[in-house]
Image (cartoon, rainbow, N blue to C red; front, side, top):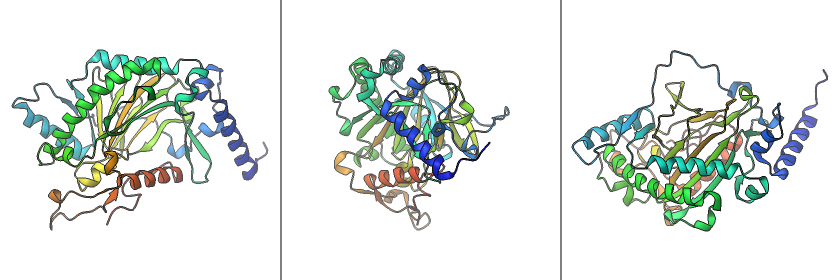
Amino acid sequence: MATIPPAEYESRVLKEVNEFMESGIGVKGLVDSGVSKLPSFFVHPLEQLPKPSSEDVQFRIPLIDLKEMETSRRVEIVSQIRDAAENWGIFQLVNHGVPIPVMDQMIDGVHQFNEQPVELKKEWLAAHLSLHYNLNRLPLAAWRDSLACNFPDEKIDEEAIPQICRKAIIEYTKYVLQLKDTLSELSSEALGLKSNYLESIKCMKSAYLISHYYPACPQPELTMGSISHTDSTFLTILLQDSIGGLQVLHQNQWVDVPCVPGSLTINYGDLMQLITNGKFKAARHRVVAKSVGPRISAAFFFSPAVAMCNESYGPLKELVSKENPPIFKPISSSEYFARHRTQLDKDTNTSGLSELMLSY
């Protein structure tokens, strides 16, 4: 078989990407068309693809029950969150206050949106392609379609949400914002600070919801639903269905995040790791592609109030000392998000505080 010259191959790939994006059919459209072989820009480098998992998994994601949180159990719950934040950066919650029917309706709303004809959803898609680049600057796509809704300063603009899933998103958002406030208090206490500390610095006043629809993949061993990354924000609250596929890196081992009925998955991001001076970890995670689906998830990312986006955040003065000096440089959230995006575009295998040269 003749080898295709690099320049010709690059031109061919870019042409495929442009045609796909112009079509607006999304990944689901590929599946509906009966595709059995992935377009080349969905095929990830072998070294970045998941290796067969070992059956003797040593670790389990921490599971925390918020039941009776306002009783003497609060001390236990805060301790569990502290342990999970310091060792994992991620944990799962049950009895979190978000009703299961509301969670189910949210999943169903995302499903209904993505099952619409292309003409009805094209204008709403956050991107028809989740695109990153390899070291040779060739595009790599994630196997998913996405819908994004932005809630700056927690203001819900109903017209910015598709009608077909508007009611479900608004109802779910109201409960998640309440849970975020609870987690803000518990996280503050886990840091040894007053319960209103994180609220007082307005680091989680804006919310960004992105829902993902991962269709069944004909060649899941060749692609990724989401590449390895850390979230750039302070806190993430994730809802996922029963399909599975989310994994977190812990002690150099990829661990499956189980689909616990009625649970939500919580993880901290880079900026939380920064202000806690490394005390709380930003969880590195990914989503593997599967031959079954669709998998549906909805993630809320929390970042500073709009008025604070250009204010610098650095290690909190209460958490540093002569014995524990600051290890990260202060940076504004807007600048950090820009650096994080640029880094992902440069190399799909790195992102995070260390790669962005924020360490002293």
